[in-house]
Length: 120
Image (cartoon, one colour):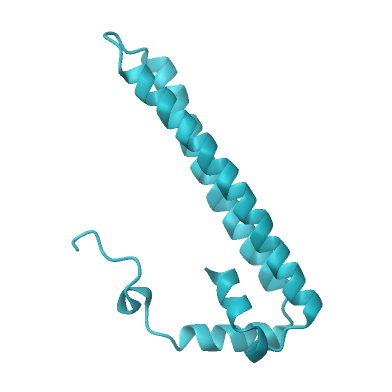
């Protein structure tokens, strides 16, 4: 989301062509990683379902698979944070300030209809 916002505001931020190219490359590489990670996660979740669909559940195997699934989730979250930081590092201090000034002036996500609460 942050990277998309940077790219959407490229003119307002005054991004140079090389900055845009670098940010797009970061976005595309993360997207590839995310697709691979999600595919692996789906396979692990299928494995967990298979392990649970037996008369006698092998708790050690289930625990290992659950930990594997959570590691995949954590790895993707960390990768996302890293790529956002790399994208921010491509901005000059002035561009970074301008970007965050515009982002902070927007209404919170819930007010924009994103990330509805669990109650909705």
